[in-house]
Each structure stands twice: as structure tokens, then as C-alpha cells.
Image 1 (cartoon, one colour):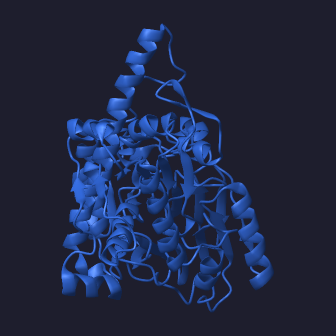
Image 2: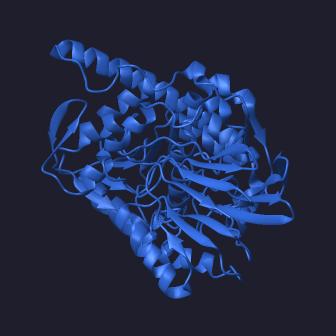
Image 3: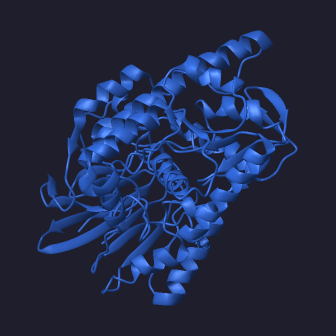
Length: 468
């Protein structure tokens, strides 16, 4: 049996998930993500390591851009095969890719104008990685596959999707390869979710696997309890309202924004925080929230109960959806205190950069981070506590309070990752630890090797490994 795995992203870093599987003479790409770390974005501009036309199919675990955001470029450069994902992922991914393309077009134009004013040429091209048209062109290739449904990819190769519990529609993908009476199962975890979290159901587990390609984003850390999230959020809101500042929240439009609204709804319903206006300043998050409403069958028990008793778990009095650019700009002139939720979650683009630029030098305001900030992103720079940061080419003094609530993460932490592995009854031939910063991946790999005495590897970018 001739199977090869090539690691084309998320290898000793967090974003850019792309894993090329070659089996029975066919090529399949599991995830097709963009790199979001500033010093790794150049990889997205480079020619793809194999001819895109040679890839038979792409399988997407979920709709976050670091797992699907490279797809329009791959298709533009020659990939014509099917793209498999769950129905909810298909809907959210279309929204996500269009938003990404629009931001890239806008940012490229802004950068071009700034460089023209400054009389210099930038280090990177002043053109978008792909356009809105490129994104729309790849949509007909998307084929929905429901969880626990098996799709035949080629002779002797099939894939089955299982609920990952990470975001709505997220999946783990088990690929079975059969040749000459021998079968191998390779599980790609994508991003593993958490148990007993709001909105989505718990992650699936497996009893048997020959190879596992496993995420490790929080492989050396543990999260706070849900009760701690509410306490921290309550304190941030109270303190900022008392100071008459704004609470600026960089948030991923997918899952994180909806989970934040869920917690705000609970705190407001219990009168634990002042009843301030909450602006969801993200057309993408507004659209994604509508997708959530279309898939109530994917909710967990608590969200289902709220839906049955009082309606959507994401609605409350004082929530204002902000769609237009003019409405967004008007938020600069707010009086009193308000919460503004906008993307992107790592402050790599979008409206949040404008809101942070307008508030980061105000001591009365708070910049509240509710998600992971990858190395090299503006979000990571801010949470590391600099005196100044560069936004849109200008330096800003950091005087606002910088707060983090780690427990919001929809990634399994170290203990939860180990809990997921505990369901495996056989001894896998190898576990590949990916999708984590170098220290987290190595710490988690050591833990797995010590706990289970399994063969664990940490592939580097571009590594090709033959498996049998």
C-alpha cells in the first residue's frame, strides 16, 4: 500500500491548514487554508507546491479561513475537482470566502494608495490574493456531505465526516484507503471542539485509527470554566461602563460572535451587567448568525431549550446589527458606553482595525480579546503589551485597558485533547501533531508519547511522509 502525506501548512504554526494525501494514485487535499501569521503570509503568494489541476478533490473540515480561505486561489490556478464539506459549512464558507475576498480587495487598494502617497513600493504585491469573482467561481465545485455520510473519492478511497464540536458544521474527516485486501484509516481532526460548551454538540470520538493528523492549538494549556467566562465578562463590562468607555471586541464572525452574544444574553437576562447597547458591526457575523438559525438540529441541549422557550439564543434587547460602512463609521461618535463586536478575530483586517485605532489610546476604553491570537498578528502584538502599535501605517499609543478571556476558545485544551485520544482502543501507527505553535505542538507530542507510548511525530512545513 502506497500512501503519502505532505504537510503544506499548519506545521509548527497555527494557521494555513493544508494536508495533501496521495493514495492509490490519486491526490486529495484535506483543508485549504490561508496563513494568518504576518511572517508566513508569503506562503500563500507562492505557487502551490503541486499542480492544482492534479488534485482530485478537496475536503474541508470547517469554514474558518485558516482551513478554507485559500480555496479560490487554488481553483483559479487550475483545481477543478469537487470540494466536500458539511451543508452548514458550505453555507458559512461561501459567506466567509466572499468576505475574505472583499477585505483583500479593499486592503490592497488602501495599501496601494498609501504607498503612492508615501512614494514607495511595498514588499508585497498591491493586489488581492484573490477577488470576489474568484471566490464566486469556485462555489459550483462545493458538494455537501452530511455527518456520518460516506463519500467515495476514488477506487478504494472513501471519506466520512463526523461532528467536530468546534463551530457549526465543523467536522473531523476519516479517510479509508483500501488496496489488495489491506485497509488503513487516517483521521484528520481539523479543530477539535470542547465538551459541554454552549450552542454546538460535543466532539465525536473514534475507537480505531491507523494514523491521526491532530491539532494542538492549546496543547500545553487549559481553559477557564464557563462560569469564569461569565464572571470575567461581567467585570469587564461593569468596569468599562463605570469609566464611560467602549468595549471593543475583535471576534471571529463564525461561532465566536454567536457565543459572545449567547453569554451577553444570559448576563443581561440575569441583570448582572448594565443594559448597554451591543453593536454587531460585522455583515459577515450577521449573515452567519442567520445560518445558525437555519440549523437548529445542530444545537446542543441548552441552546435547544432556549430556542424552544424564548426564541433565538443570540437575540436580546439592545443588540444592534450594523451592516453598512456609514453605520460603522457613525460608531466613532457614540456617547457613553457601548460594546462593539467586529472582525477579524486576530485583527488582521476588517472593521475592527478602525475601532481599535479609535479607542486604543483612550484610557477609559477596553480592548477585549475573546479568541486565540496567533504569533505575527496585530492582535498578538496588542495582547503582549506594547507601548505603541502600528495600525494603518500610523503609530498609536496603547492607553486602553487590554483584557483577555481565554475560556471562550472553541478549541479543545490540553486535557480535552487527551480526553479525545482516550477513546482510541488500538495503537495507532503514528500520530502527527499539527496546527499549533512550536512549543505547544512539542509539549503535547511529548505528553502523548509519555502517556500512551505511541509513535508521535511533529512534521515541518513541506515534509512528505510515506505511510504504510
